Length: 437
Ligand code: UDX
Image (cartoon, rainbow, N blue to C red):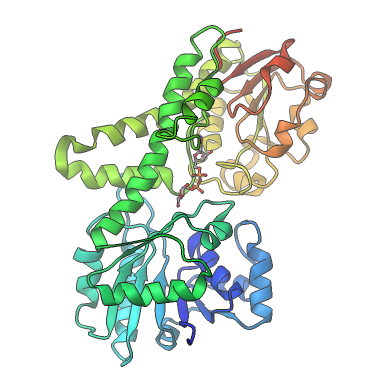
């Protein structure tokens, strides 16, 4: 069977990962991107963010002529399926901003009205429930050759390509079975072994994405709430509790790692959009507000620890290890590091920072207000406290002798629980979810 011809609109994290994985699987891909600088870079095989294997697959696909990039929406006409992956960021008050998506849909309308053959438009961008039926479908209603499917993604940064190749589920939201089948046929061409599929309507598909991310956020805020209580109880450690409850198959062991709060481009944004969207249903969203509230307050746990160490003094140096919102990415979106460092600067502390990947992005926000280090030992030199804020593998190797050799005072805050407290008995060692020893 002839392979579906694919176009992807919006070469951000999701769109580029999707385009590259498809090209790698020998589909002919057209990537549409309106940002000229990004476009020029992509044509040269350069990506503007880090994702394992992305650059390698991109360059291989460019060489084989399996992928091309354009700013001209017209080229979409020569494909069968268009995935829309433009950003749906938050507005200042936390609502979803659909302006890029609407612009793309009205552009598609103009292009596809000149096409006779059937075309499937797939909404991959995360949109609040009812967006497709009340905003997108009406904009394309006149085009009898065009059908729409809602097909949310569940990609994690740092493992996006792998998540695309081995998804736990495919959700397809359609108004009639025929459209679902077009997308299913494409997936059958892509996967040797078909993943589980849930076929449903537009709005349920949209809601699945929010329920998924809200549940992940809930697990983290839940374990952080338990962690904050553990900190008050002698000899209690949240990690042991997470390990124990994670054995209950009804709970599951993933997403029970206590820490400084969740960040990134999805969980905070989607939770906030869900809350704003459901405000109209009055008290039906109080649970999600609580999950968000716990997360917003979680950074203060680290600040309280610093306070208890009597470190709020303009002569003190604080070494922050880890800036990215999680390991294996250079992404700083909603990273706890930004909130924490802003707060510490207000307290007139001297801040040294280290991160294996996110330094350049951090510089764009903080300029010369903090000191940047590419070596961990330089960052902790003469520091009065070292805070581990991202769970990078390099920090797991930190041992007491390296710290003792370099630091001025032996204060550690392990906000990610990657060090073994029993090895740091000579230190003033504090950690999220660890009761007094
Ligand atoms: C998330 C979802 O996992 C993914 O399915 C969705 O498509 C996009 O949002 P991502 O933002 O890449 O993916 O990161 P994820 O691995 O989920 O981590 C999000 C945040 O939660 C990070 O700040 C991470 O450090 C934190 N986290 C995660 C915890 O604090 N504890 C945990 O147990 C897990």
